[in-house]
Amino acid sequence: MPTKPFHLAWFLQGSSVQAWGETWTGHIGQTWMKPELFLNVARALERACFDYILLEDSSYVGESFAGSTEIYLRNGIAVPRQDPSVVAALMTQVTSRIGIVPTFGTYAYHPYLLSRLVATLDQVSGGRIGWNAVTGSSDFAAMNFGMPGMPEHDLRYDMADEYMEVCNGLWDSWEPGAVIADRKSGVLIDPTKVHAVNYNGKHYKTRGPLNSGPAPQGRPVIAQAGGSPRGRKFAAAHADTIVVHVKGIEAMRAYRDDVHEHMIACGRKPSDCKVLYLINPILGDTMQDAQERKKRRAAIAMERIEERLAHFGKVTNIDFGKFDLDKPLPDDVTTNGHQQNLEQYRLMAKGRSIRETMASFNAVDLSVELCGTPDAVAARMGEVMQEVGGDGFLFSMPNVNRRTLAEIEDGLVPALQDRGLMRTAYEHKHFRDNLLAY
Ligand SMILES: Cc1cc2nc3c(=O)[nH]c(=O)nc-3n(C[C@H](O)[C@H](O)[C@H](O)COP(=O)(O)O)c2cc1C
Image (cartoon, rainbow, N blue to C red; front, side, top):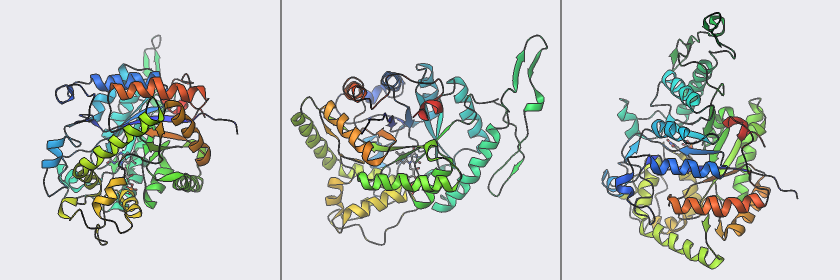
């Protein structure tokens, strides 16, 4: 079968201390406040021709383990976490082609403020901004914004549908060609091409037009990660790219097929949204070296089981600190948080204790196992994409540091390029055009 290039993106655990407690991180405990590592990441991934960098976000200090913030603070689990718009803006200034995708929660920003912020970022980046549109999931986050808790899971997506309508209205409030900038006539903006929005919805209201002016991409790229049935519908209706964590080729294919069906039902073309799957490739000089590294990563995952449960609890709102880890998770535990994560845990658990389940659950391998020399991993990534049908991978590495970046940029990516699986130069100026180029 002829090979086809696919898309690559990188998932950063927020504008936070990266990889605390890992080796090869220098003095990250002191240097995290300054953006040097983030700027290095952006430059390296642009040299490697990645499509985009996604900056995770949440706006609260975790408190979902043993009813306390302690484990989160001691171990730097998603804290300290800076506002992602600042690092995103800085990243755009040291790059010229790669897409930058900060996360903003619909619960935390009024849609007018969000549309303006994202349009401004699109302007200063020259048309390279995406927005990871999340609904949020934690009651602790909701309380930081004066709400008693998060609305119910599916209602959050209903509200987010309306939210998207408002944002799209605001981004469209400037017609193409509205900025004339004619020095002769002295006219900067054609008033007939800038329109009020007058949106009066059930959850949101706004007047418009957007005062930031037009975004170079018109509407910035929308990224989404809906995993539940309702979340998938939302993603299929709005996203230009979806990032997803499902296990194994069959589930990957089924997810993409499902999203495509929903897209068609919304009148969209499946090729207009790129589905990227989470991976954590383990590279080595030889297969044996890679396997040893993988064993070490699995051992670290077991040593850090409580931290991993604290992280899992943060996104599912389940306090695993309350349970006996040597017993199974009780059947009646449900979530108003990330439903898909809990569903995957249950699929894997099959009656095993929490500790036994966590030995494999997201310990090292994410969507598929990738372990070996750069060449072997590149070949496997090509096979996986052929079997799934597309569209690429999202790297989610626990050990974000310059060494890991060099292994990807100088090891794996050239091996992918040699196989024709990865672009060697960006095709276009704007992020969406690159994303949809193939
Ligand atoms: C790769 C990836 C990145 C995500 N990033 C964020 C994030 O930064 N902030 C957030 O609140 N949720 C984030 N989520 C959670 C999703 O928005 C979503 O809630 C989750 O995938 C579960 O789907 P569901 O809400 O449909 O149950 C992310 C999910 C995935 C798979």
